[in-house]
Length: 337
Image (cartoon, rainbow, N blue to C red):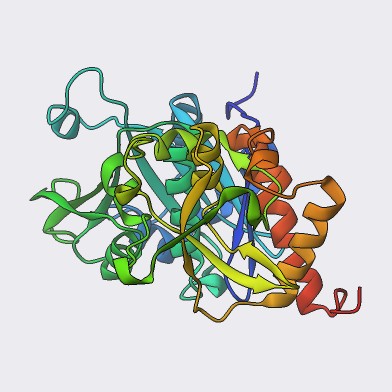
């Protein structure tokens, strides 16, 4: 019988310098867990108690229980296992008492066990990946992270990903090490609001929705569900405009494909847009538009037929984009292709 309960979710992301993949944690990864959980330097930052090492029995219990209560991942950076992270059901009574019984409340935990990968932005990125998975894939109501007061680095990681301090309480595991336990939180509504586009009204105009060229092959069902929470088909004034650029004589969407598909499904013929004045890697966009041309995706109407689950979106789109980024860096994609 397996110690770690497996799942079938793989998440893809990265920094400017590293590719990051979160793979399902399984028993094959136990040697890494033994190594990381017997390193006192690693445990100093990941545990509230003043523990120097865990034995195998304790490690089996920790990861066995957590994997049955949620999703446990191995963190790979450029193909190298460097740590683990979890998205699991909230198990702290003091937190659960703050919510209705029907609320889906989860928590994130992480450990970068390979110390050579500390301070490289890995933690911030993987937390962001788990946050997206929680809200887009799992429809979570609220997400928490427990941080000890001495771990200012982890506090910054959660704050960078939109978490705010929710509650603090005296630390009981090892008062000589941590005086307080800090509970950080991000709600579904805060997650949605943080990702909405704020554009001055004088920079917004309308275009026929059929005239906008996508630069994306799929729409995530999870993202579409969240967009419906604020979308009003009868009021375009609350719609976040679609950012566009001129690209090969076409008005190309640089973002906003989910809400463009939602607008089409709601019967809109015109849609609010705004010029995207940011600097982008147009080589990547050229390749993405080429993919769309090959797939016959010419407008939001075509995207509306390519709505897929968050799990499939991670593989079919996020991974493909990550692979494209690597190919561009390695000089395998050129403007002449």
